[in-house]
Image (cartoon, rainbow, N blue to C red; front, side, top):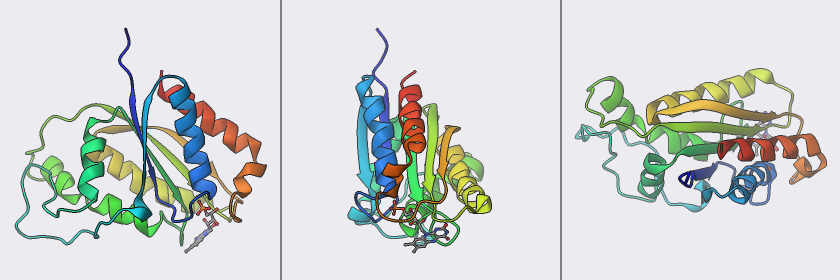
Length: 191
Ligand SMILES: Cc1cc2nc3c(=O)[nH]c(=O)nc-3n(C[C@H](O)[C@H](O)[C@H](O)COP(=O)(O)O)c2cc1C
């Protein structure tokens, strides 16, 4: 019997029921319908601080700051797939998403500088992103940040969905093509 896939979705938008969450839900729902074990984290509703650039850091890649970020870190380590979803804010991922990503600096140092990182579970990474404009460079900018995180956590950057021209809350519901692609990604994540 095939093992149940553990998929975690991380929402970077502060707008509940907004475009990013609708797309993320479409991905997660499709995966769940195919038997995946799915969890969603709403960064804006968690209490965590940005990276503090601590000097007395651990060498095993684990951040020493104790807050809600630690809850997701544990889930990220055990996941088969990590789905990051963020709107474009000022040409990049949202502040919530960037704060979440920066906290992996300890892991980045352990992996690439100290070479003290323990073996990582192989993972798949997917990135969902929306923006009001039609700026490809904004998506590329956000993608480079997300790719950097995925490399750090040992995830292969495998699926992406970029939806331009989406601004008003839930406007994505008028773009069936985007919703369909989100569901397709969710489906493929279970294969
Ligand atoms: C603070 C802020 C900054 C934004 N910056 C950009 C931007 O640089 N480029 C862009 O195309 N859209 C920008 N937008 C628009 C959002 O990306 C867009 O409304 C998106 O659909 C919001 O997704 P959500 O409903 O999931 O929050 C910005 C919106 C906000 C609130």
